[in-house]
Length: 239
Image (cartoon, rainbow, N blue to C red):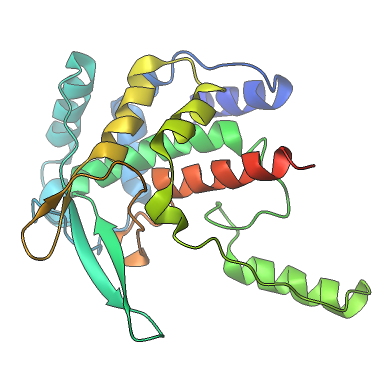
């Protein structure tokens, strides 16, 4: 983790009420270059059809131009390309695939958000978190069921969660820890970005967020982290 993010994480852990004010300026060339290292290079292509290899061929200049757009507040989120994958029940699941440059910027933003919110998330939360996941949860569950005296297992799912996530409430929750309007506006741009469907229609969602898949290369990006935030807030208000 970079020194700046270590400082953010330390402050977030020591002061649970602190609102961060200078996250937007952390989206610099250094962070973006480091984030490029973490981005999957074999991911599916977005609406601009630019591959990671093509972007990387002029990486330094592309990132420099992206940072200039951020400084001028002229960055515009591209449409998200819709892709459907089959479900076990015979239906299909809609996924969203961002453009390569959007994936990179979203990954950098995600890393800054994680520096804050990883200090708050419960240890029993495994979804979309760094270094843990479904397999970690299954391993932990196996131990609990074998040696902790549990006799029942309850499986629950929030129907249509990704499709009906409230943008307004999500931004309110982010604002509890972030007092940086340009940074919050950047996240809102992605929430409001249009979706290019397979039939050529452009959809403008008023709620919800695209479900992303490992084929996008950004399976743990901003919407996924925001989902964890919503779940954490829901649990906290009931404990």
